[in-house]
Length: 65
Image 1 (cartoon, helix red, strand yellow):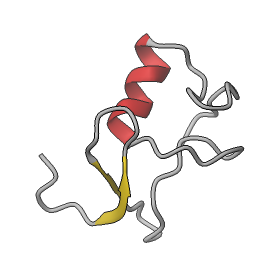
Image 2 (cartoon, one colour):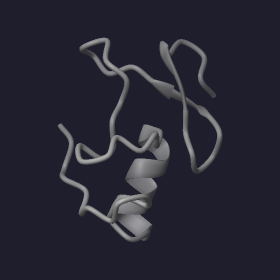
Image 3 (cartoon, one colour):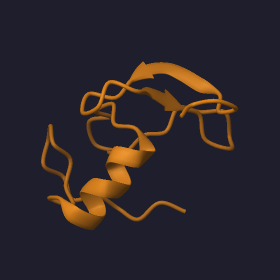
């Protein structure tokens, strides 16, 4: 499920998948406060179904473009 996506080398702490790079070539970062490694899929799931906050530092997730 990661074919064709450029991976950043970081591993999601929720599902263990690789974290992809954004359009800027930077690793996707769910939380700007602590940069806890979470892939976009888990981030979107947490925002939709979960706590809507970082699992590590509990900062509320901001909307990503």
